[in-house]
Length: 147
Image 1 (cartoon, rainbow, N blue to C red):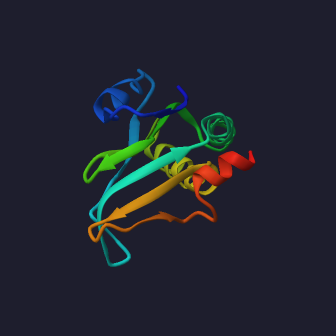
Image 2 (image 1 turned 60 degrees about the horizontal axis):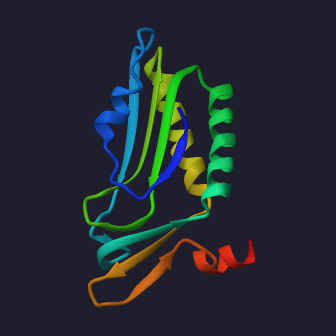
């Protein structure tokens, strides 16, 4: 399994089913959803942009690290781009392992590292009509322009 960027809705049930293996005793999945608020502001939508080539390479490194650190069987990760409505799944990470501890630890490691290291930018759209980039030093368009 691997990481991919998608402009299409994420189907968590189908992704989870693909992690099944006879030797797996546990499956842990994380779904990151678009919520209707952040830091006291009413949010109406999120918009994600990514530097796909760099993102895929970096997540490949993270996956290799997870495979070395944790005794896992399968894993898969998908992150959305584009404009997402409240309630939509923005990111999905799933891990299967022989035991629950490894599955939990690897899933947490994957989502935490993806959020820290991967060039995916989030723009929040607020009820008052204002929008703004969240948790990034510069907007995605500027980062793409500078390479």
